[in-house]
Image (cartoon, rainbow, N blue to C red; front, side, top):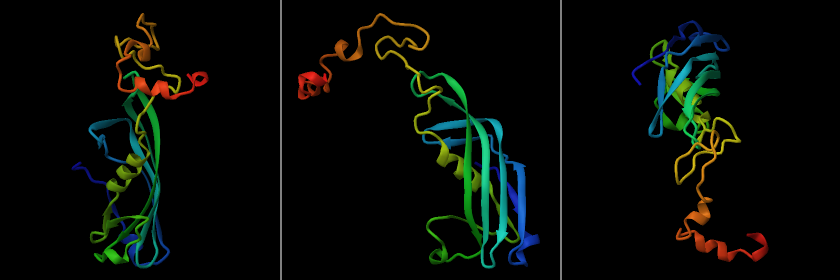
Length: 179
């Protein structure tokens, strides 16, 4: 990662109930998701608030961007709007027992905090597991590789083209009226 987005929280440290608004682009060009590197078509934009709750600082808000993905069915590259919710605690305590397991925790370093990991985490959670550019996408033919959204191929239907499939015998388990 290497990038940071340091926010000076010293103006709200001395006053319980004080808040600090953030409305800025986050310096994140791409992020690793599984085995893939996902790039952003638009810079991630953070709209958040830091609130001093007395013993901790609460970070809440949203981060929005557009990611460039490959369709899991046909491999077409497309842009997908993405919005993630931030809900994190910032504290200078090192006591793991004092942390809430339902919220992310980030360290307060002097009078500042790096909010980039929280923004990246919020986007990563919203990333689709198998992205598709259109729910009606027909994908590619498993036999010839033809993009079925653009052309029809002359291949036999996949189940009949491969009767020796290890799953072919499952068809015999269905009653005749359900085939």
